[in-house]
Image 1 (cartoon, rainbow, N blue to C red):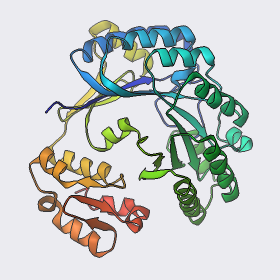
Image 2 (cartoon, helix red, strand yellow):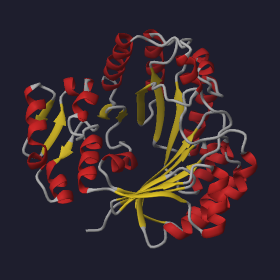
Image 3 (cartoon, rainbow, N blue to C red):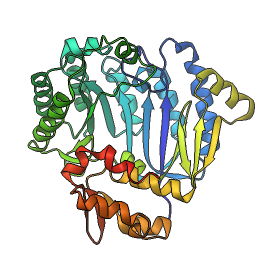
Length: 375
């Protein structure tokens, strides 16, 4: 059986770094963009030949921050990569960095799914979290995307933001639902080390909602989304029928994937490959020896099983026990009998002949449940 392989392309450039962002993205290095795309071309030609990919995800950073000319160059590079017929091809876009011409270039380049980073419809909150756009800009960009012909659009939304109130979150969700996107990512703010918010948190000047308020935001958000036709299929992701993100599901099912570009990661034949994070060093290494690897680690069978459980239980459908057996030549009950029985007794997990999944209560304390499976 032919292995499914996913392709991730990292574009590390941003107009401005958001206060919560710990992704490997950088502002004020625009002068490297041409050299970066040239290096990306070399890496893609070297690593992607003779592979037929099942999906593409162009992320960042802000891919839509590239100029029209740079976007054309990127899609010319990708033109020689093979994809299965009808492959899902996503690009991340930030409101305020796209226009009609850029969207047309994306469509001509084969993109069939756009992911907009909105986070909130409240303009004051947008400013407070370091976003460069307003709600009005986002709405113009969303409508323009529809006019160009994009029929599969995701919108990223966050809750638990500093100074965010429950009523403001409800307003955001109700507004977005009226736009009728196919997919909504709805996730909580996490304060990550190295971010502007982390520094503010350490100084105790970040006014975050309480744990109770954040739980209420999650519950009410889930209720609003599900009652409006969005099915939750993963902890933080909701979709209309058959509009789940195929690429992300591939990650959660531990499919093989190749990541190209600075900081990108790959998982191929049980090997974890990490690319150089420093953009200039990535470019130089590619130009000198055609490689950008910083680290290559071979996962043990135990590590792969733990990762499969950890990622698979994030999905509401849970883990396919036959898939586990096919991957590892072991029954899941044989490996994790005690953990499964213990969590079923606590009402945190359900088991059928085919699947293993978390209950509603299990999802609420998922960190606690998942830690049981990491030995």
